[in-house]
Length: 378
Image 1 (cartoon, one colour):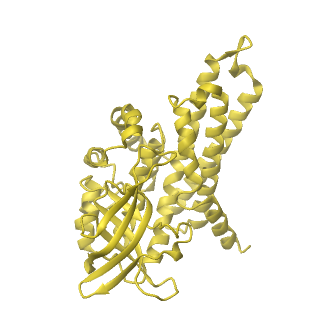
Image 2 (image 1 turned 90 degrees about the vertical axis):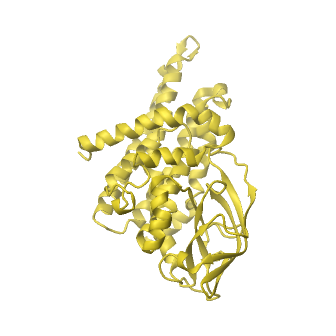
C-alpha cells in the first residue's frame, strides 16, 4: 500500500549494509564504541545520510517514506547505540541547517555531513537544563565578527567524535523565547574541550561526552538563521528527532519478540517447550498489537508530514508510546529468557539496557505528556 518496488529495493540495500557492515561488529563496538567516521563515510557513499536533503548538497531528494524505510531498517541493528548515533547525523544535528541555514553553512557543514566526511552532534542539554530547554545557561555574546561562547553541555551523543556541533545558546539576558541562537560550532576551535567521556548503562556502542566552552570564538557566519530565533528552530528540530525514534521501535520490538519466541521453542521446562505456555504466547500477542498500533500511528504521521501538517501532537504521542512499549517488551522478553536473559552475552540483555533511554532522551515521558495535555487544553 505504501511502498513500491523502488522503496523495496532501497530497503534491501539498507538491510544488506546493516547485515554486512554493522551487526557483525556490534559486539566489538559495545566494548570500544563505533568508529563513526569510517561508518558514516560508507553510509554517505551509499546515499543513506541525506535521504530528504537537496541533491545540490549531496542528498537524495526523496520523501518521508524513504526516510521511514531507513529508520525502520535501523531497528534491525542489534542494539540502540549505533542507530542513535546515525539518527543524530540524519535527524538531530542537520535538519535545522537544512531548513534555516545559509548557503555557506549548507556547503560547509551539511554537504560533508551528508557525504559522511564530517560527524555531527546536537548540543542542547546542560548539567542544569535537560527537559527544561529554556533554562540553558551557555551564552554566546556577539563581539564584532564572532560570538564568544562560554558554558558547558552534557550527554552529547557523538560528542567524542564530532567534527561540528549544532549548539543552542543564550544570545541575550532577556527572559523570552527570542533570546537564543542556534550555532554550528566546529569542534577544533580553541577553548572547546571534551571534559569527560561519559560511562553509560546502555548505548555503549555510541559515545557520549560532556563538553566545556571557554571563550570559544565562533564566527558570526556560523549562526543558523536569525539571532534570537534559535529556540524556535530547535523546537522544530525536536520533531525530526522524536519522529526518528518511532520506526525503529516497532521493528526492534518485533525482533525481540521473534528471538524470544525462538528461544521458548527450544527451552524445555517440565518436559515441554515453554512456547506451549498460553500465558507467554498471549503476552507476546499483546506486545505485537501495541507495536502494530505504533506502526500505524507512525504511518499516519508520515502522511501528515507529506501534507506539511503540524505533527507535534501525534509525534509526542508516538514518542510516549514508543518509550513505554520498548521498555515493557525488553523487560518481558528478558523475563522469558530467565537466567540466560541476565547474561551479557545475550542480545536481549543489551536491548534491556538500551531500552531505558527511550523514555528519557529526546524528551522525557513526562514532557511528552505535558505537551499533549497543553495541546488538548487540559
